[in-house]
Length: 437
Image 1 (spheres, rainbow, N blue to C red):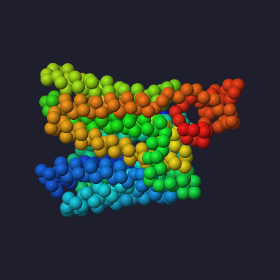
Image 2: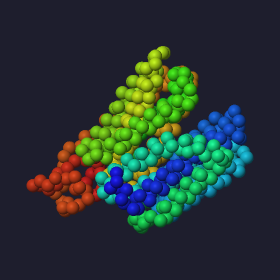
Image 3: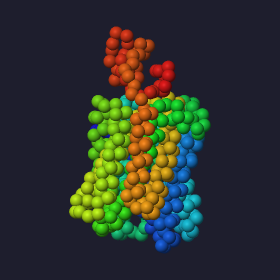
Image 4: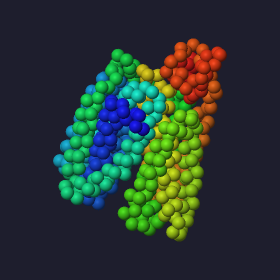
């Protein structure tokens, strides 16, 4: 990891990402407290609607945002999105009506739908070496996991000395610091002159056309089903099924984060020896096994063993999800031509959140109306179907030889010299080095 952190531009971008994520985590806590101030006992409904607006913005706007952003300098896009998010955070403490919260959340999350895919496409160009990029993906996964663990702790510490409205100030400062770091970084010169912008549907068409990306759609659904169980039903398992204090909830969520971080740290070395397909499909199959274990824990009515077993299951969910999610950037990078890369990342952002938009309500509604056992069965079956579909859609690709590429070509990084040319194997890549995808 230290190697990639020596890269000055990437180091600034990673720091910007961490600061923006910290601001987002503070905003989540502050928004919940604001909803309580405005709606009292109806705060849950307000917050749930706000989160639904967030997902709808991600799903509906990300492809269009990617198409628009591809016509503009990336620095301006990233800084503009951060400034919009900071402005919304500064305005939120002054709202007096619930509908105003919904409008501002829509603006905030629309800016995030612009920022995130653009940021991902920039990192690809900043780190052209695949090993460095793989390490960057692991660090990004760690940043997300640490944010989910540490932001509530930071929010609690701040609430001990300031009012919850000041948390929005911390959110704004995080976004402003992110904008300043992006402005100070020497980003690659990618503008409309180099990047083809062919419309919002281009990235989605790429996902339909490339077999490995079709499989990624199914993998997104498998991960979303597992994440929904943890995110939506952790509190029900801890306080309801286990009869433990709500103070144990962070421990359960921390187990999930710990499992994810452990795999994210191990993957850079593993991916040097094992193909992405093996790692990602292995993670999806592991999710099916973990769901079976969760079914056993859920069906048990008593026993002190259930609490450590639940922690182990949550850690296993985190590990399996990380195995699927961490290499996603490598897969999109290889499958998308450079001119379509921004659209491809926007499509992945949108389509993955569409899966969460489906599984989050499913986990909550089925769990509340039919019980946890039924919810686990339904989401476990969904994960099984998704994993099997991914295996079917992502074919194993045999060794092939390139006879027309010169030594030192970037596509031949892991190739071996043979009499007929350069031999290697990989997932389908629309990089100009293959006649067909």
